[in-house]
Amino acid sequence: MKITSVEPILLQGESLYGSHASGAEVTDQGDWQMLVKVATDDGLTGWSDVETFSPAAVPVIQGVSMGLIGFQSLHDIVVGENPCDVERLWDKMYSGSAYY
Image 1 (cartoon, helix red, strand yellow):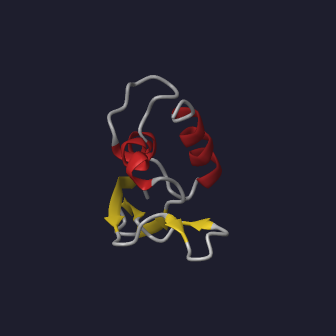
Image 2 (cartoon, rainbow, N blue to C red):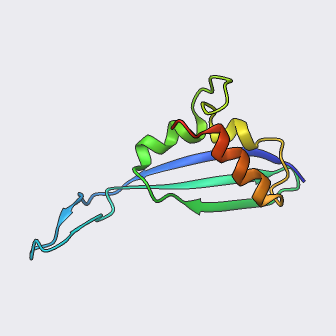
């Protein structure tokens, strides 16, 4: 089994980032969210949410790679790889995107 695609899906809600009426704590009220869809050649699909500023994460996942270690998109790093080899993929993604 091989990964065939990694697709970031950016969603924008109607709420804004800010504080509640009490002003005691600032919270994310759902203004931007992102899902990541990972597909395989066996027809399996995996989904994840992203816990960062979503518009900035889109190019990290599917932007243009520079071909150098530390400047590759996560899509380019994992396509063609076995999704079951989690530790090796984590190491490869960490090294390939370290400068982001």
